[in-house]
Image 1 (cartoon, rainbow, N blue to C red):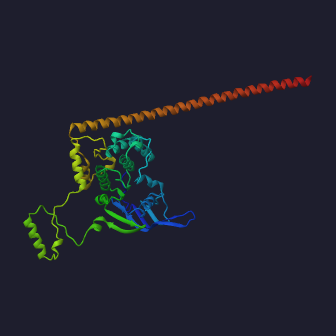
Image 2 (cartoon, one colour):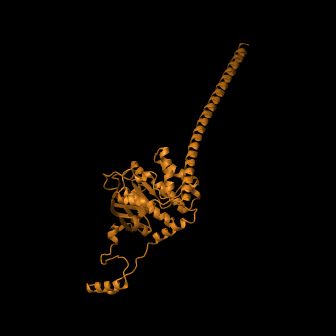
Image 3 (cartoon, rainbow, N blue to C red):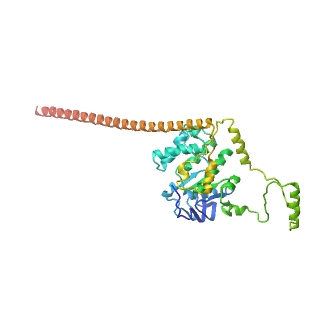
Length: 405
């Protein structure tokens, strides 16, 4: 599924208001109060605000789970209640709600079936998504046994099983380790490079800053700030210059030069070595350690499913993102592990197909058994009717005989 390029606005809200009523129909809480916003294709839109600011209510109105009290909201130019547009939306709620007795593979297969995907296609996608989120080694485990982070990974996979044009992620990195957080952000960047629209609701502002193009900050149900992230965060009264390492002499000369050209507060001139991003540092340490020690935790190979990558050629930024997602697997151990995983997934698919065939046979046996039981009941009824008729005839003959006497 590819986003339609002729649609200029994916989500548009005008005067959107939601008031919750008490039992007597009196206004109890104004969760959203007359907000206006629009989201375009290919944007990663950050929906921010403290608890109780109206974020979840806004998302539920976008999904059509709540009706606005006043105002209007359109999704792909249509009412959110329109069933047809549901197949174009992927949603990861704040809390991961999964059927705990289904395995990871069965969970994704189930959600694919809800979207009407053919059997082979949804099984292929389930396999690819499990690889992407690092859960292929636990494909046959019930999701009720998973930790919060592992369940979160399955939740992200189910939100992408239908290749949606609009992806709504509510706290997607909650419970994930730094490796999982980076992988989620890489997936978000890839979706945006394909023209998909992503709405990201998160309290982890560093994640929002890494991936969002625009943000909207809610407080008390109203918009307090909205705009391009780079414009909002830009400090107009300061200038930043990054150069290769300078000698102490050059730094002193630079400060004198700035003082001579109008910088009247030299104590505000800061010349220092830039710090590394903690996430990059952490991932660097983990990559080095993974070459020496194996782990039983979730481990993704970075492979994004082909259907999420799209058939058209990626632009330069999209290709760069894809290249950054591919991990090196040059050593024989990694290749052997990948082969074993592929074999297990193939066996799982064959086992599922066998189960489906057995279920079909059981249904046929049940139908034949029911038909036989119905025939037996009908036969018994016919025999009982025949005996009753014979008894009535015999009784009539005896009555006639008595009457003649």
